[in-house]
Image 1 (tube, rainbow, N blue to C red):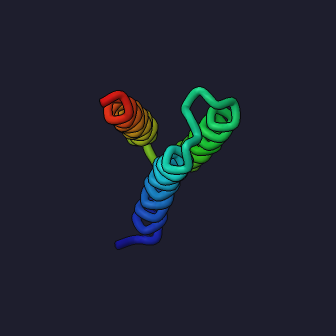
Image 2: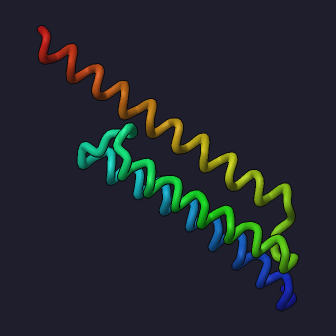
Length: 101
């Protein structure tokens, strides 16, 4: 593997790890009862997403990641965040139903 291929692979792995960290951060916040409507939650999520998008843009400008792959990383992250939100609300609804019974 050439140095350029190694750098591209490393850049891609790093971006994917950063996206995974954002999902983990969201899960931790949800587990600690931080609701998605909370301004602090929104601030953290927005900041993290903005930072990752800037990292991806930088990697694209350096030619380490193509634009389509960068878009896929962000799209996948948004889907994962949505799944975490859905799971949170489903769990919350189940707790509410349990309390009412």
